[in-house]
Image (cartoon, rainbow, N blue to C red):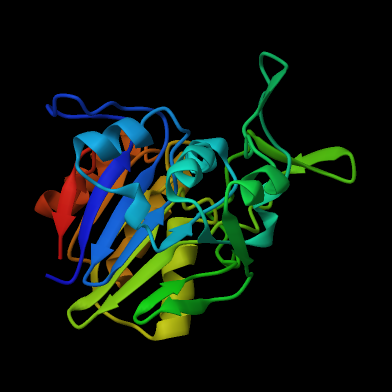
Length: 278
């Protein structure tokens, strides 16, 4: 076994007594000699589920934040209070002031990180900020900032960030993914894929060369995608040698149905409490 990956936070739970669901995402990634926490959910589930699933947060060697939305970073403070000093790897844009704007209702809701940097550092976060694709441990990479190159992955039109005192469409400069490079191929772990699933896969290919993809895991943010993006995503996925798509969180029902029809048994839903071994 190369890796064991346990879902500590996700929108759904399936039949596990004691495990709770929330709108958020977090994975506990184990390999011999190293444990990594990828995202922390919004903070309602991670402590409970780590205890129920017997995953010791004190054993974490690194924390990776995929981006600065509260449903991926809100549990960080709780984790730090248990773990203490630990490296937290992220893009420097994670602390952007972010909002979801419901235009029809003319309402906005803060969706950024609920705690500021100084507070988190006081709890033991050693932030390692980077914009670059880089190896953070042997065979483990972060994508860094992913460029938008195709025309169909436009991003969520309801998500905004404050820049120079003005709300602008969120550029998601901080959106990053994790790549586990194994002998049998890549395991690609997404937070929300705000830069677009295909953009991310192309970026990884450009950095590591074209390789078999053992698994793609996490949120694809296709819930907000229009019909054009869904159609193009299904078509472009054919370019990649994918052995399994483990979707969760922000994929959406319509996209999940389309992916399940296209991929058949290679489509695997992830829930809070799911454990996947590679």
